[in-house]
Length: 179
Image (cartoon, rainbow, N blue to C red; front, side, top):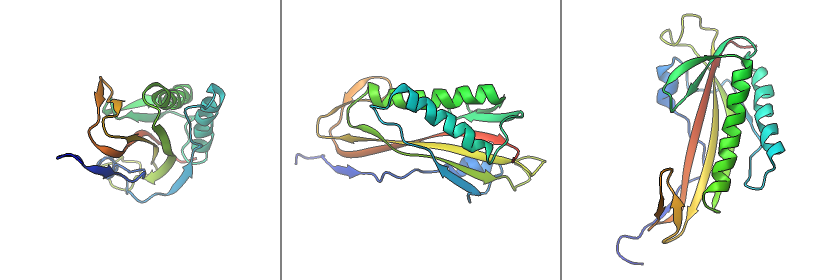
């Protein structure tokens, strides 16, 4: 090994954003949780669409997304009002983007986790009506990098000088009333 080379292995574990949950009045103790079928790089478009429809149907068991509710996209940094059609489009776009990420960049990228967890809002600064839930749709993607392996960091192609596994957990939040 040359000087400065390190072996870095990260566990493939979905992480939750505890600060976000507390800021929005939710206790980070799940009320319910369900897994979503994983998407692979060879998944046909129909399976990707089925995963989005599965999220929608499973969400109806916990959060009533047929009535007005709110979505939180972390890259927009605010809650946005939504309806059932817009939410289904968001779930479809999420699954499609995950599939595209795995197909477009490098061959070592794969999905290791896809889960929805529902948290109750109990703190008064979350909402005045305490009968509200936050659902966290979490996706985890890992990349295995070798010495000098080329990878895409979102903006440009770069080379890794470190061996190991990199993991990333993405979130999409839904806030609404229970069914």
